[in-house]
Length: 166
Picture (tube, rainbow, N blue to C red):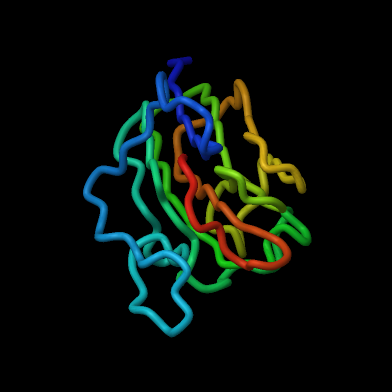
């Protein structure tokens, strides 16, 4: 089994970015943070058009869920899927062992989950959530070749994550 790393890192303002490994390949411009009116939909808003993870290791720094809508509200994240969410897609040609680190950069009540398909129809493989503004780590997850969705979401007010790193 080939060993890869998927690092989803949401940094607290005081944390160093050293060693993080996430960069979005072929990404569209990000949605303005803390939008209060309707915005155009873009990649990552839902499973029909997820943000692609082109290769491992992968990083996506300074991302937001604000303005993306709440498309997946009945998942294994429970209450933590009630805010605006962002969906990534990971396609693996061969089995991989991945580690995912998600840091909410000071945002409380956040969660992350990995599905073997879309969040609303696929099986939930693993989730990490909590009220603390600390990193959530999924370590040593063995994935077979196939397609996976990774969803970042939030519970309570405000209903979006203004800035995170994956």
